Image (cartoon, rainbow, N blue to C red; front, side):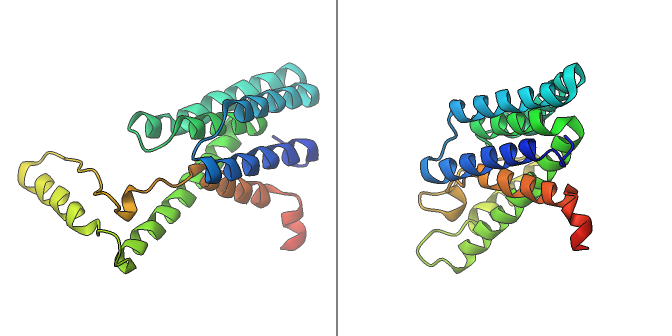
Length: 185
């Protein structure tokens, strides 16, 4: 996507932040939001770029799905997050959705580290460190990885709304790519 196309930039930002707010409140992202977003992204690509835009939208959708599908398959990412990144791909196209997806994963990692450090200072919740140590010792002793689920109330067992990471990571990418960025520097 050419980010100087303000209707598309505003539309994708609305999609992202509506999804993030919904995910924060309900721990899910409705299909109506992501499918509407994907439709708008595809339509805008077609309006601005014709059939080349359709190819860009569908390629971005496919790559957006592919970026988060492994996380979904192993159970660390929800289906709504995968569909949201695919919808974002219709606006951004394959190259930009790849960078936005990686930025979103990085933001999610920072948030996860924040959750982990909360465990150090939370006297109320069981610490994950004993569980992590047991998983590491098992790997070291047997050569086989083992996953132990978090204990009830453990900070690492809490779900965090990944749409927030997607919104932050993609917004940061859009700001970085913005023509206004040259003015600020």
